[in-house]
Image 1: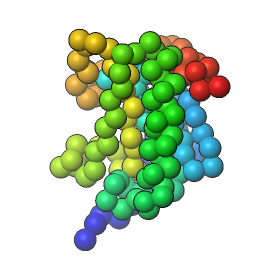
Image 2: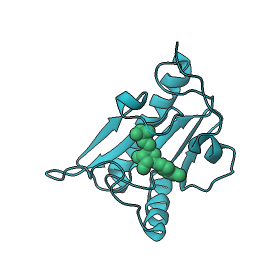
Image 3: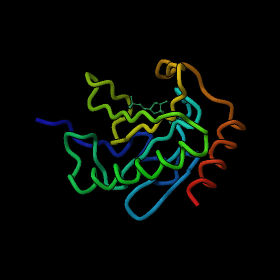
Amino acid sequence: MAAAYDSGNIFAKILRGELPCNKVYEDDRSFAFLDIMPRTPGHTLVIPKAPARNILDVAPDDFAYAMRIAQKIAIAAKGAFSADGITLQQFSEAAGGQVVFHLHVHVMPRFAGVALLPPASRKEEPEVLAEHTRRLIAALA
Ligand code: AMP
């Protein structure tokens, strides 16, 4: 049987406003914010507002909508960071690489010849995250 959604996860707390984040986008069904340990400049996480642990339990429409917003962020991020490409990732369950159990899609700007940093390598400086947030918000406007 699939594991149950736990509303105590970090991203649920961010959605409830109990923890801070660098928000770049929000609408009635989705929310997007910068990863605090970016693997590339502009690394953004897109999440549905509806509770879902991962791709194994998310309602198909909620997943489709999150992907629609991931595309919107990808296009904005490519411009905002003058990226050469974009990588999307989504991990489901610990064995699939998932660490935070609220469904999220990673949107990562890529630069020719530059590898991604390994996951959770380093926490970015708050002022750098703030500047990247401003850039993405401006590109989304
Ligand atoms: P994963 O569950 O493996 O897809 O990855 C979870 C991601 O969440 C990692 O890239 C972390 O750097 C990121 N992360 C963890 N805590 C926070 C937080 N409070 N705000 C933003 N990103 C976070």
